[in-house]
Length: 402
Image (cartoon, rainbow, N blue to C red; front, side):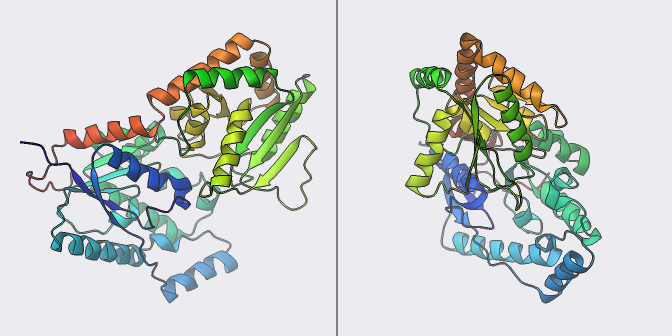
């Protein structure tokens, strides 16, 4: 008798088919599951409840007290999300749709969700990991800190299986929220670009980069400060001073007002992958670049490292947050301390460029990292196996939260 495919309720607060949300990651996660033969019922695209009291508190904290406030973690806000999720789930089940488990890329919609279905979370961070790390999660109001911890505590404990994209995030779930390590797993995400390149293509790209001058450095990022764009400009200047003519392309943002860029830096602003022209432009920049340069000061999981690896493009970045789980020194790039000298970055780049065989080998191994673990096929297969190991099937009884 043929086994029936697993059927999941894919729960997101936004439209999971919208590739502009979370850099398209929510969409690609759902596609990776479907590619493994898992059937999905999409639950989400919720209305955001605008409570006048929450709005007033937000304005008070932001403009009168100078504090960051996150009203979307307020219990009333999240209970409304849970109600919308429950209503959509009930309509699906009432219509005869079989649902074996709930799968979500974030804990907020499940924090107050009352369900007899098993819950799986695949995400890149915890609230504790973000607090006083990302700029928007510093100098926060007491209310937001309290609500943020409570939402994660409830959501993480409701989940039967917790999958994180990095060791950093997984450790936070265990250390900060007391999650059972047996329920916590690590699976990196995939690359949100086309992945039709072969090993021969990568060797050709690497060869072209070695002969092309000036060298092209690529920084994709939508936040000038957090992504370390000023530092990247200094790295590029150091590389030029070492006798390696180089240019820096910044995609995603422009410099702050009053900042004048040197002639060797081009700022392209935000370019969307949702249009064919935008995708073609971005992928051409990946093809032409000699190095991906992302001196980020705070990072959960940047899929741009996966995307770079799919082009055999070595990444130069910082050893912060979840980055070391994705960029492995000497395999698909190098990580440096957040407080390091830009000259050290430039010297490592110059050493690689002066040793073509070593640079070619790094491009090859970066592509191998993509083929083995940083693509959606591998990620989807790993997650699907974790689901099967839980023995959630059409004939199994509902499993309560651990």
